[in-house]
Length: 218
Image 1 (cartoon, rainbow, N blue to C red):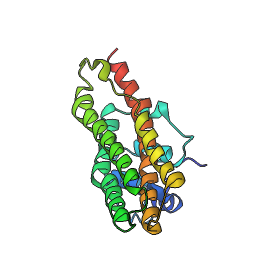
Image 2: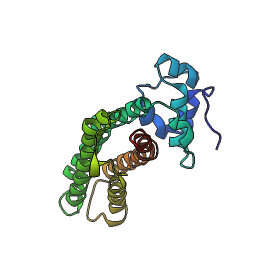
Image 3: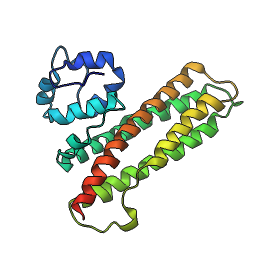
């Protein structure tokens, strides 16, 4: 798979990989990019071109992870990116799943285990909220202050990844009874999208930001 550079047209990348649309939305980039290059769009949106292309390549190719390059960026750049991602979860991703899930249950009768799956999603949602609250209210503000976080040092978030994967698998393997198939597909697709986003975001959070933090606080 070819590495994306600043000279590529962003529209061509989106057409080839439409799953990056939520990602570019997190950078406040909207569709309708015409034939503009990534470099031009980054300049128009006051984005660091190298950082944006690094994130883009990371999302498109699971085997690509420019650890050295990402560590070269200022920690504030990475923190701002993760914060934007969290805001996207809170404003769009999670409410979208909630709406589809609630509508699916209301349109599917009562002879299924959808309420159980919804309770699993609610647990996952609370874990995500707890992570966001810790990072944004405790960890990020203390990043450049040598605060002793003790045993509350950021975890690797593996439990969140496991729970979202379990929820996806429950739908695919253990869904029972009657349900509205199109609405069910919408819920599963939304879960898969946030799962991919969480995995990639956590790679950057855990492999880059946590290590930078540890280096600053040796």
